Amino acid sequence: MFNFNKNGIHVVKYRVLWMCLSAVLLLPGIIAMIYSMITYPTHTPLKVGIDYTGGSILQYETKQNVDNKAVGKIQTQLSDAGITSAYIQVLKNTSKTEKDNMSIISVRTKFIDEGSEQATKIEKTIQKDYKDAKLVQFNSVGPTLSSDLFKMSFIALLLAILAMIAYISFRFEFKYGISAILGLIHDVVFVTGVFSILGLLFNVEVDGLFLTAILTVIGYSVNDTIVTFDRIRENLRYNGKKYSYGEIVDASVQQTITRSINSSMTTFLALAALYFFGGSSTKDFVLAMMLGVVIGTYSSIFFCSMLVDFWTEKSHEQKRPAIAE
Image 1 (cartoon, helix red, strand yellow):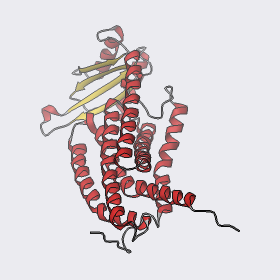
Image 2 (cartoon, rainbow, N blue to C red):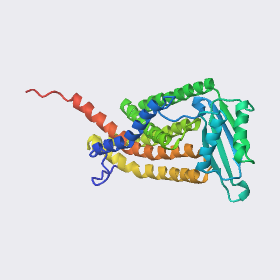
Image 3 (cartoon, rainbow, N blue to C red):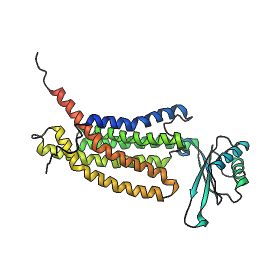
Image 4 (cartoon, helix red, strand yellow):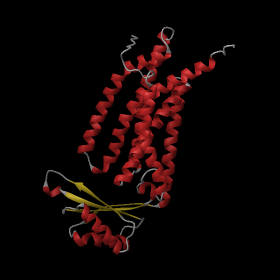
């Protein structure tokens, strides 16, 4: 049943506010991405991992505690041993049993072969202060493979966007399809902007899992958007002559907002549990998902609906006959 609550949420009336809020959310990330493209050797908007740049990661496990001061010392020792441009990170693998309470020293460097002279130097350097340190993981990605992976990731993202434009345009109208894609771009820019800031401040790198998170966020966001658009279309069919398009949009948002928030909240809580109690290797992936769920819910309710109303209003203005002076 159509029920327009004049005291409810008004997407149309306050669309300038939603536009300003979106600008506030996106602008810091856009600035960070531009700065990253200027300063990073790879000229990428994000600090990318070896999946996209090529290189090797060696992880050594030790029972000893490794703090930030020790990280600096390891960096200096590696430089003295001829291993330049190495990036050191300490991962904690904690559990209730003391036996499993380990520190993992992660060393990222240029592409090297396992068992090579450089790998031996790294291991000897680590074992100077950590006698019990042992290699638990060795990953290498060559520059050719990383370049191909980057191209395939971009193609996958582009194909997903084109497929969504085609489906939504066929299911609704072209303006709905474009509005939904602009909403997806809004969400992707926000998530990548946050990770660009994290890369600058905390050296957070993105890998293949990040692209998986972005594609998942796109699918989740467009699902909420389609629900809202479907309600707008249904209300237009039965109440389009009685109410203005703006009132239809507001009423449709009011009818779907509770469902969108409830479903997003349950997803967010599950992701939060995985983030705080899951493994360290998936934290960045889960964080991207959490950010995507929040911004996707916002854009589906406010940003995409606002764009559809704005597009419709401008179309009607162009169709009005000119008034003779």
